[in-house]
Image 1 (cartoon, rainbow, N blue to C red):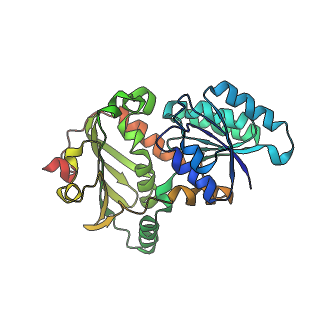
Image 2 (image 1 turned 180 degrees about the vertical axis):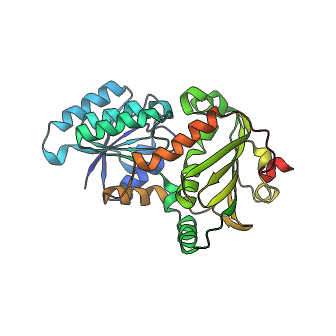
Image 3 (image 1 turned 45 degrees about the vertical axis):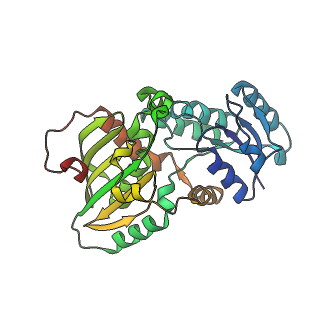
Length: 314
């Protein structure tokens, strides 16, 4: 059993990390969040020390670091807003713990090089949650693509629509500076998935960029991709609305649908299992998708309409 600490306990994604810590047989000993709506701790780790000030949390971890080996924190799970990830990863490394950070590791790609240097200096690792790499439907697709040695590029259409209310745009998630915008906040792990499945980026176009939706095209080593991301409920397909669904995730490969809306329940636990086995996803795994998102955020809108996503073609 290893000791964990967690930053961002009141956030949306924290319960998945708490569940993963519990499911892997480990213990949360300390947690922090500036908000004290953290009753979720009672479900998993009611005895964990809790702090609303990051400075007191930092001091507590430093105190634990000076204790016997079995009292030290080995991992700090980071579920804080995107723009704080870099500083909270540094906190974890400073107290001689590995960092397990939600996507994206950082908002700007140049910060990754500095974190890699800190890994070498401290001897501790920075891990990230690239959960789509362990999704059963997508791992099966990867095996299928690797078995296909035809050399022809696949035609991919990726759609991710997830309803968000007005609160989203008023929160830090709606701030380009703090979240990296919609393409970073909800898109980065889909771009990681595409690069993981189909190889490195050879070209990129952006056809639409709004605060609530984006669309573009990618040329990858083994695929041509048309992608669409949205938090506008009006973009949900009629069949999803009829079922009362609030999200739609879809990828088609040469016209064949791979619907992966389901199957997300235990992905964080699977990623944690890999990390604990020393086989998790690190800085170099995260680098290509963060570089791509940075490029998408700062690209001009393309006037080439030959590779529009079907949602734009309509």
